[in-house]
Image: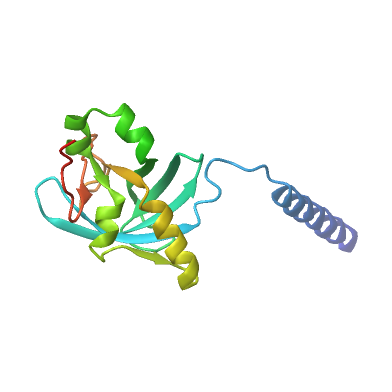
Length: 168
């Protein structure tokens, strides 16, 4: 009986240590790297102010930063929105003005309202992140209605508080 217990313990230890080794060698995934933490409210399509939303972002190219948005920092918070930060030369060259005015917002205008906070980094780094964000336009996809038990399939497009339509 003692030998069986010892063998079981050794096998369990082997399985656990192998699992740890596999976890350490895990290949990167698209879900890795959302480490830029920004907090800001949004203006919903009905004109109400919601949030603030916690944006967890990562750069995926020189022109695009993508963010997962939550209503809290709870580890089990629901993903309620997605936001893309698109370099202004890209969004303004490829999105018609009427579409831009309906769905996009200028991050410089949003930052200038004072409602955006870059969190979890030293102040100097927060200023660098804000300066880089100011060179982008944002588009938000609202996926999970407030208070709903499940997504409805409808996608909203809130914008920034302080959004100003472009005239050019």
